[in-house]
Image 1 (spheres, rainbow, N blue to C red):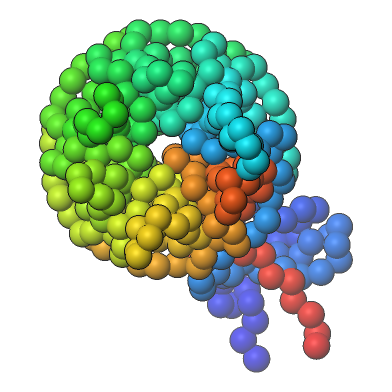
Image 2: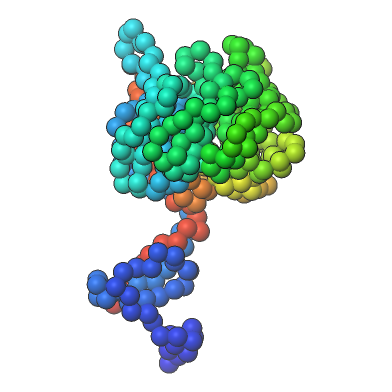
Length: 340
């Protein structure tokens, strides 16, 4: 009988703990658990429950990864009269298990945008509740006000790697005037660059400064399914999302790979949705649903295979504290071998 060494050219490794960087087909003996394990890959994507936010709210922005994320700002709106909305300055940090309150934004805002990492993020625009051009930079400990956007707006999209490199696009201000403006951040100031093809607000965006996606949103006369791809110079219309929606959560690395989830679905009426869609650089495909209906407005982080959804507004104006973690098809998965 052919042995594992003859097939792979090496004996099975003996490790005290499971390896952190799994390779599909890898096999090892875990000497702590006294079992043989192997690395497989998931075949379909799915959502699983994560730790709850300390303060449930909607219209937050997000940054980071599935295991190292930030939930920034937002708004609390009571589910009963007088329905007075309270804009938030709260920032919470996620470690893959639980959320911890950290230092607040300098100025409370909702419907802002942002991106970056848990230690280097940027947050910009939004409503205070009046439309804002404010930009704040996060260094892992606290927020600092830096140079404003050229155009104040809320409900805009954002994409970027850290607090030195960012893209802001779309939005609305004044009420009823949808914006196509795109601005590029170089770590010091914002510069206007090429406009979106379709002006809109409450759109969904992901990626980095030179490779981003803008999709969905609200325009005139209603919600749109348009997707535009950014190449650092201009926006190009590409394949539409599966259905028109606005205010969804997002995750993604560039204009070839991303995820959108939740938001408002305008078919046939203005309803919260739990639908998830995956972008592969060419087209969108519907994936497994979130467990709950939620209007996010940019609250999400991570990649197309390892994303996080948090907060949002559920049915009856309920402010959600829930977190859901996405594991996409092809993600590494540890399997334990048994003799049964």
